[in-house]
Image (cartoon, rainbow, N blue to C red):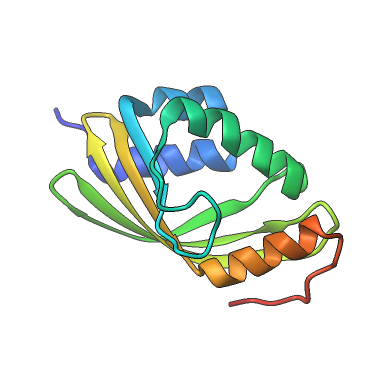
Length: 145
């Protein structure tokens, strides 16, 4: 029996939310790529392989967010074949205690029981402003997009 691609995405997001990097690694294919689809964030538009993502993502999360990290709440999943589109609400707290909130629409390509590609769409202007403010030590105004 084939694995439902939506179940693979649910498991992947759950592992990200728990910061279970071993599980995340087990849920991606060897040729996995992660791309932030943005013109406004440094490094975006350049696909990141799985090994790099598993190194960079935890470091970034530890630097910016409190110990719980950002959380994604899946609000809608639509699948066609091996493609899954996920709408999600992101939330969390930065290390300085200020809130983070963003909306996401991510496109996953699932092969068998693993994610092959992830293309992440979000309000990149909001993300850039929030991240810059936290990195500069300025407490961003509470803002919910």
